[in-house]
Image (cartoon, rainbow over all chains, first blue to last red; front, side, top):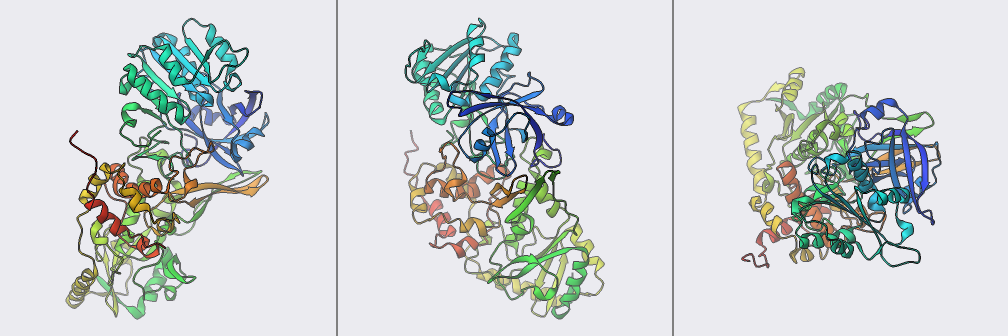
Length: 279
Length: 349
């Protein structure tokens, strides 16, 4: 944890590298490096966890960790410019110091996935923690079965991690299906919304499935998976809420008697199906 | 049990102030609330209950979490004397136990240490709570629905009864007993005093409403999520949030930065689940967009979710929300309405 005596105090991190992900410059990826060696040693995380990204004077916002624990030295976050904190994050320059609290929440079921086929379904810039998961699985490739990735974005510009997608597309130990909502000139991959493409791809329903994307994508993708016969306890998703404290006290991320920040953000469909309005 | 003449109370409070920062019911503007006092003469004894709950003593409406500047972060330390609170009724002493479960114990959490709230703990740990018998419950009180009683001692270190000309003190916790032993100027309470207490208790209990069995509330609430009853309940709520601010158990907060340039502070402030912006995300998506959803959240949290996490209801029956609601949305009526509600869904299939 960031600070053993006081969880509310951020640790310092340095902006090591900034990558502008798309032509309209609304999505940027930040590689942060630890300022203090001690913080680096203590910061143990797994794919699916999140942090509160702090800009002093503006506030904090929660972001999923996009790097994998196998990529030592850095933490990666991809930030869409939407509100006052993300605006300020977009003004950052390499070398600037920011605050991080975390890692918070639980993680994707990497232990349960061992030896299993895995289907990963993502949408838009919610692909961050899925990148973490994919890198982690590829780094431990022999522990896992077939890996299928379905990733959709509104248009080709809005995919994040484009260079890595190109590399993954060439691998023979990972099947990648990229799709955009509507056909655009020059796009030679799939067209259509994620739920429909999932239906077309026909993943093996005995696999485990990890879904992460905007609420509307999750809402329409889960029924498709259920219809195909995926087991309720093998479908996992990651939820998003306006989390402030990150430690189950401030009250805003409650879903039923659970808190997304400490009981989640990763939940199985088995857990979520009995919680109304969870997604 | 010991007793002190009312006219000698200031001696006792002086003695208390030596070792503690003392909070007690006192004038705050036109209202009466718990505030730090410097002398016994500031205490308002002539009250039924305070307008505001004592949660602000341990969980202030706004609190600096740290200051930042070029020199780095500065975390406020508490080098002051521990806190003593005088004059808390049973509805308020019980509320501290509930809040301490959230902020202090965090017992349902996987790694307890990580989830303890340091700002709460530095004030609550080592505090001394003087519970006070509630001689005259109000027409809005319903503590007896939630395991409370005007003369219950739960949550108090020392229990105090105002018998008109005396204060009778009883040590409840070890900490409370030890403190009373240190005070040498009291008389022993007599049989007459005990009789007087019994009489006052009987009178106080006669003011309370008829006891309602709220045990079935938990199960009932688990079954009515999709029912139209929430539209009925929330119809007149204007989402002003007054109920959440006066409530001794509501504890939602916001974290916000104040400052200019490189110098400023991060503070936390009371927030309310009644507000639309409470859950609105930057994308515009809001899981509790509608008033109905927010009213349901508040009531479900109190009478269902908190039970799941901490095995009790998050309500002490203090009645403050009933007093302040600008549209007379009476939580006692809501509880009855829920208990009486016939579920419209066909449960057979």
